[in-house]
Length: 249
Image (cartoon, rainbow, N blue to C red; front, side, top):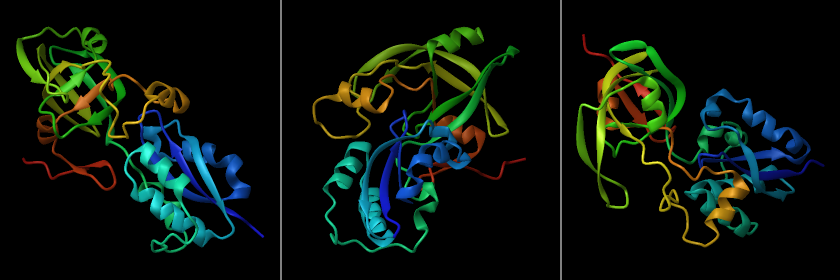
């Protein structure tokens, strides 16, 4: 008789996905998820935790409760604390075959940047975090230098921690999903000690990051809402992907 497992996989950008799998297929699970194009932006995926059950229905009930939690640590707690028969409606068989149904994390997109004055100077493709709470784009100082951009002004920016800083502003061209637009760039903040991505306040943050391979530094690039508007994209928060809007003539 087959047994089943509720599985939590995580990626270095603090994203996670919940799935249900037969125990006999566990040895190939990581490889299968790392081959999936629908969640390729977040890889590499690795196993974080699992619970075994006698039936698929029981495993899916646990998966529903685990997927309802937000944040990697919250999902780990939910999976570890699950008690058989703990409630929660069971979805249709096979509903956890689509990893995007239980994907949790930020929205990412692949993008390239170029120097408007020297189009051959280009960086990317690179994974870019979508942040609708930011106006402009951010790019690491190393990549800004590689583009050969020169600042045209300085501006004041307020960080997520409420700290106001002054930074140079650059003009660049961004290329996303076949579209391009002129955008304003500021240097990425770099390492941030107060960024826990919404997870709990427990100690051992460094040990936790080391265990699961989470990045301690900011992303190389960030896509703000002004750039999204110029490019003509909306954000599908449920699927964590960009939706092309009809472009004006």
